[in-house]
Image (cartoon, rainbow, N blue to C red; front, side, top):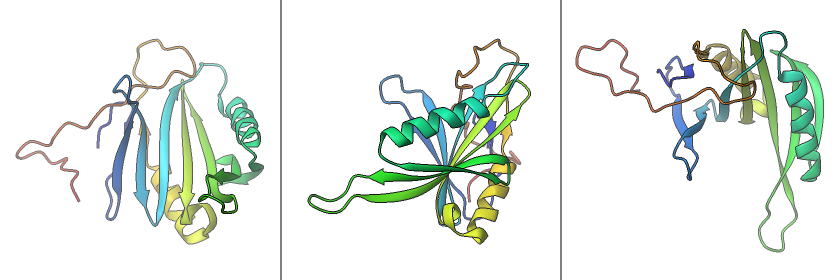
Length: 171
C-alpha cells in the first residue's frame, strides 16, 4: 500500500488507519492494527551525517515524565527502545491508570522511522514478534526533495486500485 512517505506490505488481519491533522487535513501518522496491538508509524527527514533516534529518545522520555509517567530504556529488536508507562485519564473519581507503550526507531539514509507499539505487543513476546516483523517490513520513501531534519516526510491517502491492478490492498 503506497502512502507516499511509507509503503506497507499488506497481510492477513492487518487494518490500516490514517491519522489526519484536523486543521491542515494532512496525514500525520499511519496506524496499523495487528495481533491485538497497534503500531503507529511516522517517517521523518534526517541529516546525512547523524541519526535522530538518540535525541528523540531523550525528548520522549522528558515528555512522558512531565505527564507523570515512567520510562526505561532497553535493547530491543531494533536497538535502543523505550518502554513507557503512560498515565491515562481515569473515570471520574477512579484511580489513575497507566498503559504500556514501546517506542522504537530506525535511522536510515536521510530518514528516521519512529514506531509506537501498544496493546499485546507492548507486553507479550508472541505479539511483539509479529508487530516487530510488520515494522521491519515498512519501506520509507524519502524522495530527493530537500527537507529540514525532523520534518515529517509527506504521507497521503492510498490511490484506489484500478481493474487489473495487481496491487489490490483490500483484505
